[in-house]
Image 1 (cartoon, one colour):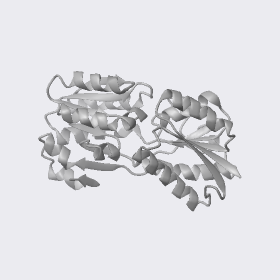
Image 2 (tube, one colour):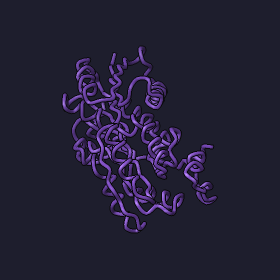
Image 3 (cartoon, rainbow, N blue to C red):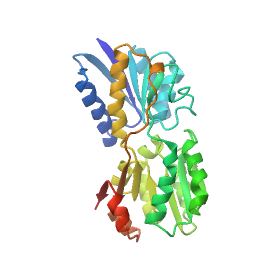
Amino acid sequence: MQRIGVLMNVAADDAEGRGRVAAFQQTLQQLGWADGRDVRIDYRWASDAVRFHRYAEELLALAPDVILASATPSVQALRQVSRTVPIVFANVGDPVALGFVDSLARPGGNTTGFTPYEFGFAAKWLELLKEIAPRVTRVAVLRDLTIGPAHLSAIQAVAPSFNVELSVVGVRDASEIERGVTAFARSSNGGMIVTASTLALVHRDLITMLAARHGLPAVYSFRYMVTAGGLISYGPDPMDSFRRAAGYVDRILKGEKPADLPVQTPTKYEFVINLKTAKALGLTVPDSLLARADEVIE
């Protein structure tokens, strides 16, 4: 029986993480791979650097035929242990800059997967933020310092056309998130862009709480940040990466090589607004913005 390893980037009780695994399992089963019948799937749930490394070693010791890696830290930990076992990643923001693949079209090596971004849409975050909060003239970009800089570079490139002053808030843990956001909020007319990362996922409640406490309109990459109390999000459905990753796992189990499977970008983006949060921030959401939303949380 063939074997699949799965290394997640959140704790086992994280609802968002469980949903992603369920999406992967369901699609895999539709492709003819039922856990325990056609294939064995071993799961590890990590949420810090020590666990990532330990669980990467544990999974690789089980001699899997392929590993599904959730987000950047999982891939980094696995590649520190092995460069031969096939890896399919989901939701890795900048795989080329991180050295995971040679290029999106021709990954090379043992790693391929699904990235949540085409960096050209960074302008959309600023556009939406200015539309829902026109008074914003200062924008903090909250980013995880352990991942690639492509998000930041794309935002910096378009910021002058929106007449906003950017401040980069680079963070590595919860305490740095709190200090960085609090320091930025000491001056008026601020807003925030929260780029996607495992750090933002794990600490989503803290980040949305800080935005609310300091009255900062903020735009996020994923819907789950808005359901946690964030203002607006624009980005792909992260569950979709896991569904599509199941397709690559299927192809690798049938003999294809990661090096020959191009890294794929999203096929659809979703725009979500939290009206309760908008009201708490004293913002009136324009009808034109509501009309464009894929989902409005009331």
